[in-house]
Length: 581
Image 1 (cartoon, rainbow, N blue to C red):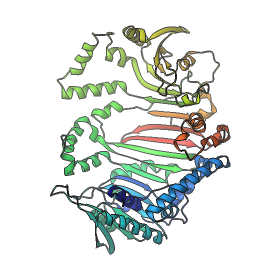
Image 2: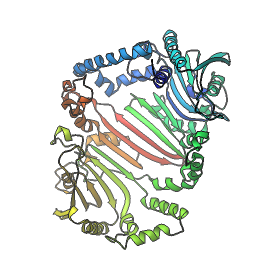
Image 3: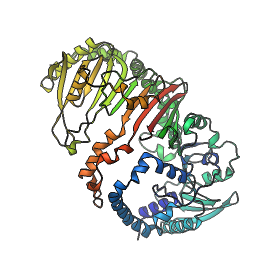
Image 4: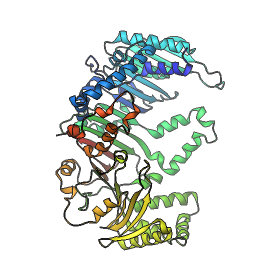
């Protein structure tokens, strides 16, 4: 006999299955998009407009072609055999082979969290199953058996000329005023509609033709986000998503159970305006595969109610030119830079502290701390010495054991407005720490060294800190730091390489945040760990030592880039992978 929890899991899996990875049999027909059927009050939305098209586009991507490469055939056969065993177990419980279930993914698949006006919060799934009604009926029959075994009370209603099935579950431990939980579903045209609320199904069916007013598609914030994210080569994305976190939190806070604990969520809601967090309107975006310029491209927009206040003032990144400086070598496998308004962030922290405490509290506290220990004034000695530009670098070392391959050297560089001031800060900190830090001179630069543990159990690593080239450097590997301090002209700057130029040609002139990476270099260490068994032993049925040499498949991994630019309503984030050569 199945346990109640297990039955519920099978039922939900049967009604909300979203497995990816095998080709559906038929092409999907164009129809009314889910956002035109959903009501306003939708706070979470995820849609694959055409599952078949998304799968076909994925097959064309570099990663999709990699999975089909003959070099992976030995491992692929073992994985398929392992999956076949899992499929047989799934078939015993679901009554259908997973390969048949995947045929249900015919057109759009959409999931949403919704609170219709004056109604309760709930979830809904819309799935276009195409011409596979027999498969769906068999799946629903199995699901209904599990739901009835779970003491679900079945009833039926007719809404908008559509028969709707409702399963009601009474909770004996619930309060008297607590409504029983429900699972609702119906078949409309070639769609399965499944929800936790009959009110939501009613709202969806009332908008079925897509002509009704006040649908989610008409929501001003959602429309603005999609205009930002469905432009250019992302006009027809394979994935669309949306999250209105404050509206969702507000909906959850309205649930009685959410206010029964020691800290009611409704009380937390009252602090959001004070912290400025209520200025977050929504975040959403798109993902598109195989465009003319990109292998994959994602566009994400963060919508903010202007002007921002409170906590959000701590995270402002004005756009500026962020070309990698000359000391960044061509050997860098990853490079990123951001321009943080650090002075504004400190001011925002001071304003928040002074809101909850008497004015001048933070300034007085910082002054007091500067009279103890190493005698460092956080504001005058540290914050005022930083410009706000932050750079991250990563490199791949091939002269390490496979077990340590995942621990690759990284460096952080903070651009300085006052090198001498920061050198003095490091001297005082070093003196205060004592034996834990050693110093040495390298090319007239003082390097501060300290051992840091190897979290994979190997020998400790030597971390290095130094002030040079107008930067405060932190490096997890002191050899990496030495490379940045050399100026012998022996290494080509990253900015001059063809790889970087290919990626940078897609950047605007000024950015808040930008990043560049070489996928092959970053993936290689983890790939070798799979081949060696350091990770791959987690799946005993698959012998990952049969994987080919990485150089045989390295050409599938391309160059990646991303950047962010602010505007009057928030910020746009774009990430992309170029087509592999």
